[in-house]
Length: 306
Image 1 (cartoon, helix red, strand yellow):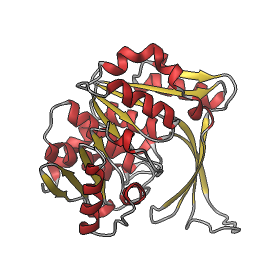
Image 2 (cartoon, one colour; image 1 turned 90 degrees about the vertical axis):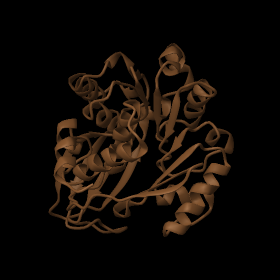
Image 3 (cartoon, one colour; image 1 turned 135 degrees about the horizontal axis):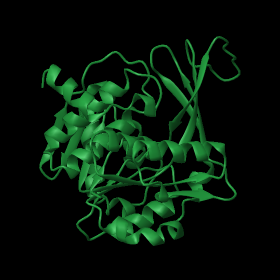
Image 4 (cartoon, helix red, strand yellow; image 1 turned 45 degrees about the vertical axis):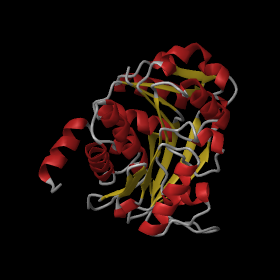
């Protein structure tokens, strides 16, 4: 196993509407669906479909959603012995509004995700410490994130942290991160520098390096992304596609990027692969239903300009 993803799993209740309602407003005429989601699950499934050697640890409730998720992960090809269950809390649920132009608004009830504690991971210490790359997000308890960071610190394991949803993080935790992948909002919160252009993105990335992060990759939406490390700043363009639903784009980017890194790709090729996967994902509706397979990503890359 080269890549270990530890993180959330949600059932996404999606309503597609002409536009996202404002507070107090009811909009009729939407279309509803239930799809598998959650940042951890999205990134794990993305990594697996991108051709990775992946394991995934999560916690769901002992309910119908949880049973459906375990069956889904088994079908995808995961070892479902690593999908834990909680006796008290229900499976995490996300309510997602998606507009006609691809924008989304999301509310999450974390449920069992917040019960994935360090004690749950004690039986998997060897698995964590022998991965090449560990990929984390912030929809599970921060204590669990810190526990994993401590386990792999000063080892050969590359810790990738996608600091989403946005929240403040300690300098101690950041100093143990090999690669941090914030978007503009998350980078702004972590540094106090409002990221609005290339100059402010570089300033924020430099500030994160001062906190001890080894590599920073700030995603800038349709403007691409900035990689910043001791070698300096490098910008990479995004692929231009017609967006239908952007719900899981960041997760697809992170999962695909992590796989490319485990396969020894250069920064340029890893980021290009991840950007292609993310671009393909926004052309389809839903979180995990939109995640492309390796063959689709490679075909896309063969048909577009570098």
